[in-house]
Image (cartoon, rainbow, N blue to C red):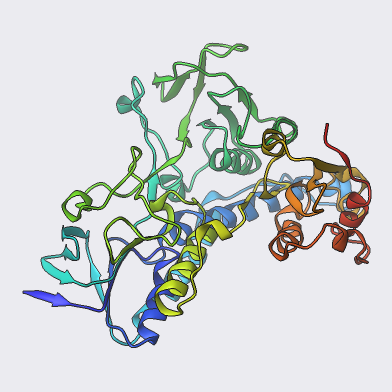
Length: 459
């Protein structure tokens, strides 16, 4: 027997619940399919749990710095990983429960548990039932990428997902991958008390960023006694006593790194395996991401793909924006497009990196006549007062139009301050709006006008 609905949503990640809310509020019947737990990656093993762990690690780090602030503590600073995990689990469960309550309260919505599989362009099978709709929204997210390295099948390893179950302190955590996920876990576990080594195949950390950003982050992590091995080629793994050895063949250092635990942090892949997309005729690229147009429509009419699965952004905020774009087009006759959004994200190490728009490298490659301003965080009074003056702020401007092209804010509150820049970029206002503004003292943001008053040609 086939059950018909006005809409089917596959996956309860960031874009799914709000879209279900809009559709049901419009009077539509909705089939909501989830195979594991409400909330998707962000709630269960992404943003919320990792930033909760980052907060615990920061507390431990600052406690060890007590003497710098004239605070006296007796005895060594310890970290109880079982309590750390319990705190994380409690926050995650509250978020999951909140999403579940929200979804289940929606009128005309039916929840189906199980793995969905297309049996036709507008027909989906799940848990022994067949569902049919002229509107299907795919929101199945991604999963950690596991490579085919020599020896990997013979050793235990962790991913950013399985790390959420850790309630102990690894003696020596070897992290393969020197990008966003790997760096956050590296600093976090070093602050918890583990020895940490990062093994990165490229010549520098977070290669998509400008070299000065990569170098500054490298120095920050090395300053916390994190070992970093770059230019690691022909990576392979093997058992080493009770732990694991990672062959790196780096330019400098021993050819292998031996540790107690291995964390793979080399990217994620879309959860498109087993969906039956070929049966539905839905097109994917060579990496498995579903191809979509500017309004997130697939090549099959009446089928959309949102979130990490479409390859148009790998962040919670891009997934939420995907929902907004789809809802605007489907329900509001408002032709919003993916190309209208400005790229923005953060790296949540300490200090954090806030990014918006183009990098300096991209601006140079574009040939634009540009201005650049850069200021070290040592000039920011608020940062010095907090004892957190590492990093810098850098902004690039298009000289003819005076519009901001991009920004990299590596420093105290950089992940929040970047929105000041982002909002001006969306407004298409000239940078002089900020340059002439009066900001509150003492804050980090008060240095933005100073920075923008001292722009120079980009040579």
